[in-house]
Length: 232
Length: 232
DNA sequence: CGGCAAATTGACTCATGTCAAGCTATGTGG
DNA sequence: CCACATAGCTTGACATGAGTCAATTTGCCG
Image 1 (cartoon, rainbow over the protein chains, first blue to last red):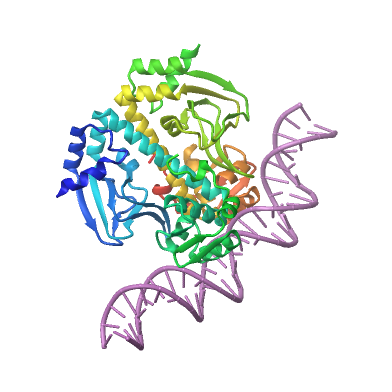
Image 2: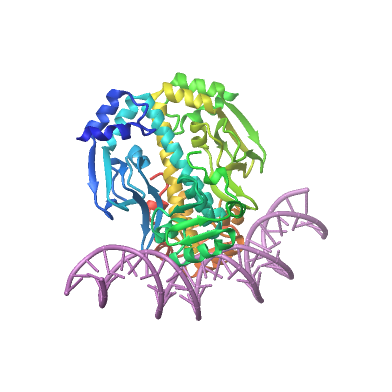
């Protein structure tokens, strides 16, 4: 039963080049669990015992400070999260909760660190993955600091459109309140921001978005590969 | 002449464990150059040919988007920067300029990637460094999204005090305009933020800061190890 | 001493957050 | 099948935070 998950994990960039024996070792040590919706998988500050992999469903990474909370990322199948904490054997900097019913694989961090030392290909894959994560967070910081909330929303819509089929109509992948938090604004402000994009051809109906004038929206958003390209 | 720089580079966490032969290889391929103040060392978007190391002076990492610019970090001796771009052989996401007269070592990225594959200890050091960088950016994002500008300034002052001797009086390490940009606000706003910290015992005289009531400032700033601790 | 850039200040505008009310969609239980 | 409860979303009115612009002041360097 457990072996059925190997192929999808094996295809992850971080595991695709590791030697068969080492991959087997990692899978031997791993757990796979199903979680219901809205379960807190990890809590920031806790020691990082496992590298997590989302096999199905979706997971939100978020963080709190006193009374405030912010959404930092959404993890979708099939990808890993909290690799950095696992590598460094340091406390989690973010909390994680399931957004929906999800299947998660858990690989003990110490096995990850051990195989890292034994398998150069795996080491290279880990460092690549980590560099990608780093670059993604830097892009996110630039987005936050260099753009207004309206520009952030416009560019988010273009990225999301691209991530999905690329069609002029698509659905937001989660609630607007989460999107607002991810973009660094309040839900009320997000509502108004959607209105503010109306002149650039953005029509909202519930969670369905229609981009009626692609060129116009692009002209306003001015997307940049150094901020918006994923995996670049 | 060139060999005189080896000891300080060798002591960097990222090089301290690499085998002597491999370290020698890297140094053979490296350049060391002196740059005057305010020289742009790298430009975002350019291909990343070198891993950079600040040996003396200081370097600002910043980024622009259309008419706006923001300061992302300051690199001080002795440490590396743009490791992620070098590892991935991807374009720089940030630009870098000297803040003062600086001495910089340049190691060809391809040599870094080659030695990574030949020396497990080096690979481990690189992944550790990269994980630390990643965690630093995540902390910075949390700082930006979870705190007001007044709280960011208060926590910055506490971190900077700590980074220096820890004494109640210390000097800001660079201009206020840069600090403002780093903290995500305008210079005007920073001026007012300093005034706003007056009630918590912060006295400003030029670039000299006096913290007259440490406990009061800490109570206001509410620093957290998951946001403010460096290298944690 | 003079000139320049940085920093400060005040007045103002604009963006964003807050609070409260109402709306809508959804799911549940009667 | 409908009434209701609930949670999310929207809207309006308002408060506050932050940016802008312009005018000084300060401090530094030639």
